Every structure is written in structure tokens, then in C-alpha cells.
Image (cartoon, rainbow, N blue to C red; front, side, top):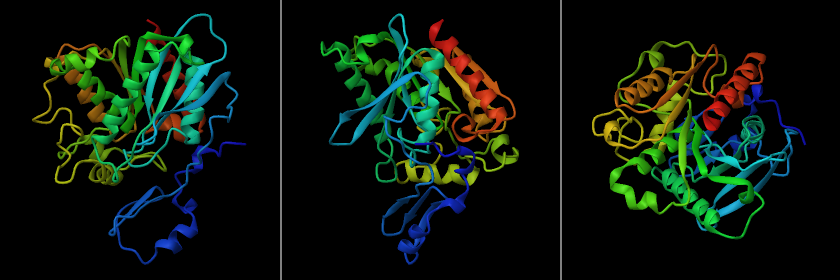
Length: 348
């Protein structure tokens, strides 16, 4: 089984004709071309332009992969990636995929390939969480699913079941990670853990010890446009346009709220004061040609001003989600650089 080259998946012409014929008489109220359509009657159509693969698919990176059920009632599950060769217990990344909270899957071939390679190159175990999607499950559903995954992980750490992945996991070295909307989820879970009002909740996750947060092109927004949102020239077939970003937020936020909701804009009035939070050391990966660049940089600056430990890395000449959606030589080089930075962050 081969993974289809990702350079082509953003071409809307790949949308299947049967989807068009089935729904041509329905009124569309939200549409991100090639990815998702929401109809007036509430029907949601996600177009299968990114193939899903099973955990049995081996990208040949020396990594074993299996799926586990976290909550069968809400259909939360996770795909684990474990390096085959290891000499000691390994740090564990709890990873959340991107997709504007509305599309995407831990089974998408692009994530399967990227995370298998990251587990091998960074020398870590990765738990890739598949959470509920909007608009059927608006925020905070994804955040709740993420926290539920941590509770499940705590139960596994405290268990004597000695699962195939848990016996080599260093539960004293847990990292929250994700890209785009998944990075937003990681940020909001880290904020929840760092809130003094949730001390008992955080303590309930012992013996898990969290060491840091890795945010790859975090998906933040706001009512006022940044310069990169207004003026930045996008790479061909960019994974995220300003119009798509606005649509994702309309689908994901609770009805009646705008993009200055704290879940969308962590620096907006009404957001938790960063200085009052006990946040984990954070690495933020930004892309030079990403419309989110300025928001990511403003977030890093706010963390520094609040006295938090933050490491910001800029990847030149690439756009949003280059590490999963582009097969160009430049993207491959930048992806290798990203993995090296992540390895250094989790092993220091």
C-alpha cells in the first residue's frame, strides 16, 4: 500500500463527483473547497481527499504502530508510534492533529508518515489522539477529549498491565504537542494544567509528569487582522487561507462567539493572564510564509513578557503545514530541521 503524494492533495479537483451529485440540491452554508461542506439542513460532508491508512501500514522508519480505544462511547482513540530499537525508557509525546477542529484524523496518511518518522528521529513514543470534530462537536469538545486522553494515559501508567508501549514509556517525561488546531488544543490543555484553580485536577494526573509543550504553527485567530493575515503572499496551494481560517472558527467556536474568544485568541481581553499561569516550557515552531506567523510571534512575545520559558523557531520559505502536506525538497529539508529541534527540546 502506498501513500499518495501529498503535494497533490490540496487540489480541489480531486473531490469525488459522487459527492457533488448526492448533494447538488442542498443549500451549502459553509464550504472549504476540497475539505468540508456544511449544509443548511445540518448535514456535514467531509471530502476524502487525504487517504486514511491503518496502523498496520509501515512507512519503513523502524517504528511499530497500533491503535487503542480511549472511550468507545465518544469514539476517542489513539494511534501509538514506538521505535523498534531503544536502550532505555523513552519520553512520550501526546500529539493532536490539525484540521481547523473540523477535518483531519490520526489515521490520515500524512500524519501517519510524519509521526512515524518523528518517533524514530526524535527517539520518543508518540500517542496521536483522534478527537471529536466540529461543527457536530463544537469547542470545548476537542479540549475535553484531549484531557480525557490524559486521564486514560494516567490510568495506563498506574496499571500493572504492562502494555507493549507502556513498559518502555517514561511517564515522568510527558510532552503535549500538536500542529495547527492540534497545537491550539495542546496550548489550551497546558493552560488548564497551569491554572491554580485546577490544582486538584492536575494532581489527579499523577504519576504523569509533564515536561513541556510543543506547538507547531498554532492555530490562533482574532477579530483584528495581523499584517501576515492581510498581506503575506501564500505559497501555491497553501494549506490555510484567511477565508478558510475564518470558516474553521465559525464551525468550531460555540454559537454566538467571535474570534476574540480566549480559545481562539489567547491574547484577547478576557483571556487568562499568562503571568498567573504556571505554564510548561514551550517550543513554538513558526513558518515564514504562514498567515499565522504574526499571531505565533505575538504569542511568543507575550509568553516572554510574562516570564515564561519559550523557544521560538522560524522555518524559512515554507508555509502552513509544510511538514505534512508538501513533498518538495525544501519542505523535506525543513521537516528534518524541525524534527532535530523537537529532539533537542525533549532530550535536554
